[in-house]
Length: 311
Image (cartoon, rainbow, N blue to C red):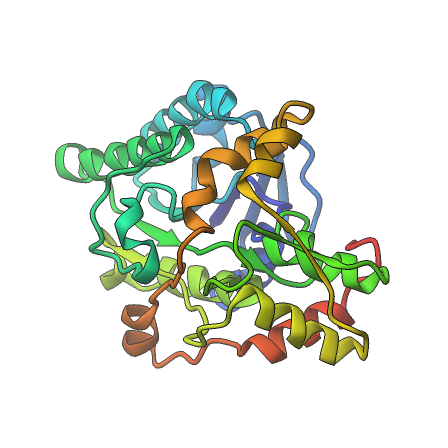
């Protein structure tokens, strides 16, 4: 049995499909889980409930934590540590391996121009501090409780029907509707994005590779160094439309944040957009002989597989 905690999201759906290559016994856990494969077992649970998490993990060989919480630092500070505490306890109790789908928020801002797995952890944001705490909890459990776990880390992502994909939200969905693209802070800076089907495939590969555990892995991401402007021009060429863009400057984000909690939460993360943001996945690519999907192929597939609403 392999279990996805937080199934149904941008990564969880693709991951459920990929796990079919390794097992016929897949359990999907969420508040309202829905089948991805015909034989999937559904388990309704609130990950804030320790007993429910323990029951959800019971009988599993590997548990994948892919849950997403609302983009609000107060919710993250309150809920993420409890969720991780419950998941670690359940995995230790049931002798289950843990794969945590992570982001890059915990890195020191000086390494954002070229992020590698050994980059220093020194987050400048409140949300980043939460993510750093989660990673520390996992490695403490590895060292003191015998937990087998790995971190599968993604850059900002995009992909078919990715409701939370940054490139989907800012560029692809708008351009598919005939609107101009948006970008944050500086359209001339490099910004890596991870393709969700690649991320899911790699996460499944890692979870089923015994030697991959007790390490951090960057999930496969194109080595192309495209700027925001180049992403927009590429999407426009694929769609056959004129490229146009509105840049959300740090000032505009602060101003809009007065009226929107979600936009306000973006403010502390702009250090990732005012400088180059390159995500190096060479460790994974070299170890598994994996070639990430090119941006042209990924954007073309994303545009072909979603309607103008992004769904």
